[in-house]
Image (tube, rainbow, N blue to C red; front, side, top):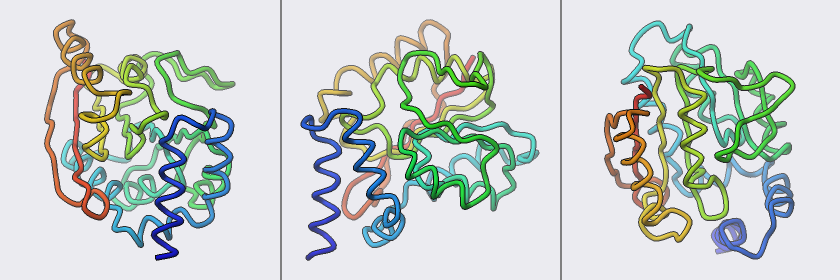
Length: 221
């Protein structure tokens, strides 16, 4: 019960509207040392599912694929993809504590400490137009985290022909005011404008505990 209570309390605080950005980052910093253990205890499958999907779209020449891991956390996705042959991986997360854990895995080319929004990413090494062959986001489309219109910036920094893969809990897209009636209509509009093309939108059981997951894959045009 204590394990469950601590996890649920942390998540509820993170997705609530009572914390500002700085307070959320601090909560993630405090959580970073036990983050992986907690997710394993609650059957988190997001990273493994995303790895499977990405490998399907990139069956060969993986060592040459340039990738951005958005909401990298402690680097679990990069670790799985590195084991499948991906070698050029950048990671982005607003929590320096999470990134310190990710750095220990030695799988990233660059680590950027930043939120991801619809605004252009600006670093000492700028993320420029058409920087990536692959952009992956696991579990970060959550109330108060990545805004729905961040997909505009995701498209900008992904090369034509490149893949954007989102693996997430299903419910935020249909129940959260941050995304409901906003995310998918924008996806459709951007497809009509020729910005990207839908490859698949599928659901699966067991994203974490009893929560269903969703896989969203688009190819940039």
